[in-house]
Length: 629
Image (tube, helix red, strand yellow):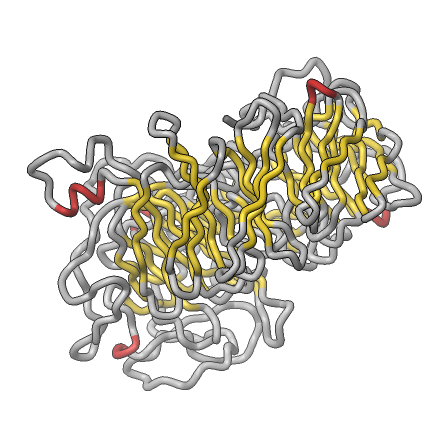
């Protein structure tokens, strides 16, 4: 599960994530590679009919073996790249003490001088408003662009060494801090416990510094944008904007290493034969195929199980479980995979290598633990309280057992509360991504070359019939389109030349670069081979297209490739210089920008309307050499 910091709103720009409400992970937004075909009667994502009275089980997609698997891999956003607004693109030029503002319509370039060594840029989602960190003076400038030009705020003092920006939904607040985990981070002589809270207002921008827990690593916001939660190595610091008017020590909900579950292990529990599930509105099922489970969310009764004939061939039905009988695997590491509910009341987290899920009460300042039967390799949240009858659940992946566990928030965090378990027979899955509005969960692994992912429909409630999707290559990363209809899968490449003699087709595919698009409703997938590694990428705000950049300097390959997410057809756009960054603008102009390596600076704009597809380029602004090459 890779999650973004909420810098670009609904536009996916090299941010591989499930995009559940307010969620971030320790290793943020990014990618992964893959390999193995499932063969036989299934095809690409086809759903074979189950036989008899139970779900069909197929052989493992790949044998993982008994040896310990490597960690799952996720990536990070790059604050040094150009950032898109609604109509304009902002490019920092530290060596010139300037920021270039490029109009995607007229291609006009203007240059402003916000401060000493402007380096890091983030844009307010959907607006032509950019926040710029001036590293030479430890200040922040706010740039606002209209048809008449760009205004620059007076520099605001911020924390020394700041290299990360998170902007709240609605764009009224931002948090700026030093992230020691960033590749560009440098050692500080000051504090690792300061963040700057910024209030954004054209008439009165303001900033002040707040003390938080040790070594901030991520910031998440409540859905209304009125609170921020700073993830630190010792807990979660709360920034409730209405009550913060000056520098203070922010309240810290401390997350300690616990030697035993806070609620106490349910040592004698076994999986019950029947139970009560959340009132999810699904059709009733026969008692002989009913999955008894309790979501523990205080709702009415309803079934979450599927009929045997509806069940996916690789998944046993969900069962109610109370697996707190496992001994806790204590950990002291940084909380990761932190997600916050829309109302800012609850947060969930885990620690690498432990079987503990933490529920943090951000109002009552308490922490509860739930211990599962093996280490949790990924954790995500589905918060559908923005829709009628919505609820909140934590989803945990137990890779060692091929299980997905769903726990209601907050009622599921007691030792006697059942939770839902999906046993993924024969699968190796270590990551889960929840789509933007909780319609699907996608499970996969980047740790080993498995050529499959599993799609679990979560909405409309009552289906819960998992679908295996057979791919032709192993997985490097998965990104779900904002409309929850399709997923973009970036693949790994096995070392070696695909044109060597004596290779099978599978070997040739393994040695090739490529990506796939998968339709989540039925699992249909299409592989697109490429002549270079497809990275970075962007998915357009309307979910109509995905763009990947292809660059091979040795063969002079310089291409932006567009795939329609409706037809899965591909169109190439040759570029004049090597591409290194891409982003989709949020305006009505339907354009993506492609930044390129050029001595004088070059950006191309591509109209993503499939029938248009025009390319316009602008050259002549001095790009900073520190932008990723």
